[in-house]
Length: 330
Image 1 (cartoon, rainbow, N blue to C red):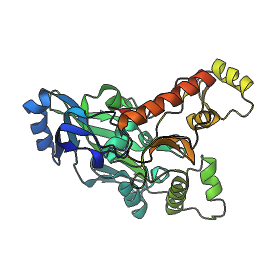
Image 2 (image 1 turned 180 degrees about the horizontal axis):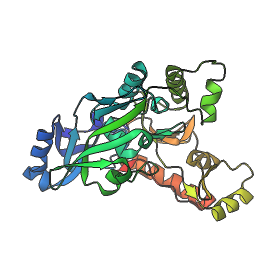
Image 3 (image 1 turned 180 degrees about the vertical axis):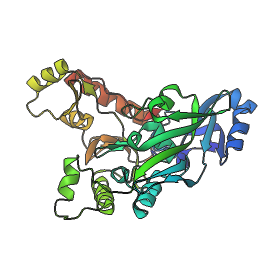
Image 4 (image 1 turned 120 degrees about the vertical axis):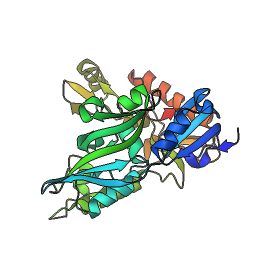
């Protein structure tokens, strides 16, 4: 076990793996996929490691695709279609779009990771989701090593999920986006509206800067404190469960969704259970946001995992809801 993964996961876990390869082309990926080391071992494809927790060393083969490039595929007076390769850093791409007056992802600014993992996860924030601007995803099938293309309606995008996350049979090579050339601010999120309330003519740059300001104010920087952002998904409950919770908690936080469903903020439930800012050894929840578990020192992956399970049990005991991890546990 010689390949240290500390710089490849934002929890800064000092885990190791048996084999580790970076690939900067389709040819290199294909070469790895047909190698005996890959075929005969457990396999893991990673991006920037911003949504992963290594409980232990990984006794297998880790492949990190790092294809780079942004290409204009087509352009009209209204829209532009861009092909962006998986290794491009997501926030660099968000900045690129604002700089070039391409609109639609400014609300997703400062989300860590690369473009491939953003698509894989169907990232979302402040009233926007990446799926809304995706046209097509180019992948390589891990078994056949052939390129396969998925139009947006075939990607099975869901809340922080996609066909690529569910099946894990594909490596994302590139994502094609369609972005607008006319700007309409998405101010669905009340905190963003409040941040921009004094602006008369709101620009995409204003929105991006406001999102960055909000995120930095309440989220820890992984370069300073080990974390992977939101550890749990916000659970969705049916009407019956919602009414049950509403009767029990006068201060219930929720967002109404279509089909008589409700999203309950996981951070609110965790805080309600007394976990906000709580620390056990080198692990704790962030003092400004209970949904984020942080590595305050030299915590092991298993310590962080065990801490998360204590939170899950508390929430289930209090609310009857089982939290689902947003972070991938390895």
